[in-house]
Amino acid sequence: MLNQEIEKLNTLIIRASKAYEKWYEKVNLPGYLIFILHELLLKKKLSQRELVALSSYPKQSINKGIHLLKEQGYLYLVPLKKDSRVKSCRLTEEGEKYAEKLLEPLLDLESKTAQIMGVKKMEQLTSLMEEWRNIFLKLLKDESKED
Image 1: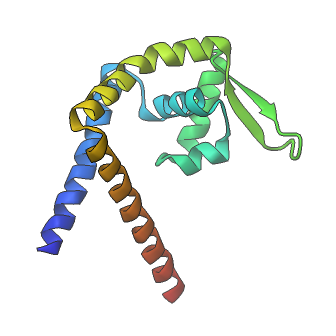
Image 2 (image 1 turned 180 degrees about the vertical axis):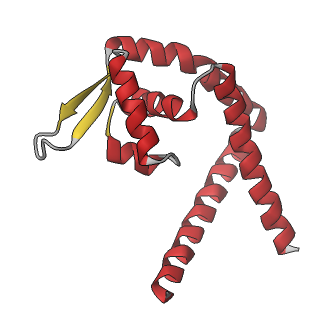
């Protein structure tokens, strides 16, 4: 019984990711670019390391996205005062406008989905996914110690 539920969960996670991939295809951009724009629009500034840690994308993809967005004039880098080797990524004014326009339909779709589900279900979903992640990572860490 429990194995069936785990299998269903894995399938649903994959299908949810595929749903986002369909949206990425619709706007004809790779997910890593959309991720960078989304995170910087919300958080205003993040280092490459922080972007990698927040995402499921490889460091190379995030780096490629940062340089591409920089070349297009949508992003700029600012060295941190405490360590000039580390740079903070920020959207330019043009980059913010681009990200807002690009992401508005996605954010609207997410908002409509959440409204249909309702606050209580959204809170449950968020709480359960966070709990699953935390337990999974703890067990993975414990398993690594045994090796």
